[in-house]
Length: 305
Image (cartoon, rainbow, N blue to C red; front, side, top):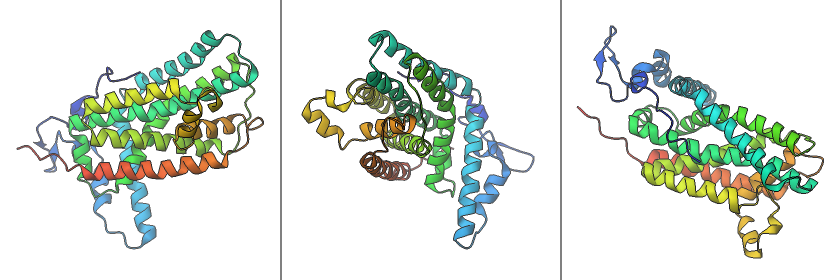
C-alpha cells in the first residue's frame, strides 16, 4: 500500500531545483519563497506584542502555509483523493468477499474498522511520502528557515492530508454500513476522535520521515501499516488475540483509535471508552512532541551557490 509511484509536483511551481532569478521587485524568483504570497514574509516579520497578537500571527501563518501546501498539491489532489476512495472501497468490499455474511457484531467491527485503517494509512503512508518529497525538493529546508512555529507546519500538513482523505473515509464508512447492514448512530465525540487519530498517526509518520532516510522511512511505514491491517484489533475484537497480544494492545494506540471511532460511529451499541481516550491522548501528545522535535532537530541543508 503505497503512493510513492505518484508523480511529484512540478519543481518549478515551488522553485525547487530552479536557479533563482531576479524579479521586477528585486526578489529571487524560481525559489520556494517566490511562490509564497508576499504577505507571508510580511506577516512572519511583524512584531506582535502580547499573547493574543502572537496567537493571531501563528494562526495567519498556519493558514498561509496551508494555502501554499494546497497550491503545491493541486495537481495531485484528484489522484490522492481517488487513491483514498479506492482504498476505502477495496477495504469494505474486500471484507464482504472474505467473510460473506458476518453476524451483526462482526459486521459492526468490519464497517467501523475501515475508517480507522484509512486514517492510520493517511499518517503512515501519505505523510512520510509527502515529507520525503519535500526533503528531496528542498522545500522542507526552506520552510524550516521561516520564523514560523514548528506546530504550524504540522497543522498545515495535517489539514491538507485530512481533507484529501476525507472523501474516501466518508464514502468507505457509508458503503461499509450499507453492504454490511450496520445502523450508524454518530455521536458528538466522533469529530474530536477523528482529529486525534489523524494527528497521532500523522505525527508518527512525520517524525519517522524527518529522522530516517526516505527509503528506510517508507519501508518502516509499510511494515507498520501491514501489521496494523492484519495483527491489530481494528476490524475484530481484541479478545481474539492471545493474552500477551491483548496486554500489548492495552498500551499501544491502535486499539484505542479503533474503539474511539467505533463508539463515535455506532454510539447506540458502544459506550464512549474513557480509558481508550486517555491512552490515545497520551500517545497523541507524545507523537506531536516527537514530530516537533524531529522537525527541529535536523539542521537545514547547506545552501548551494
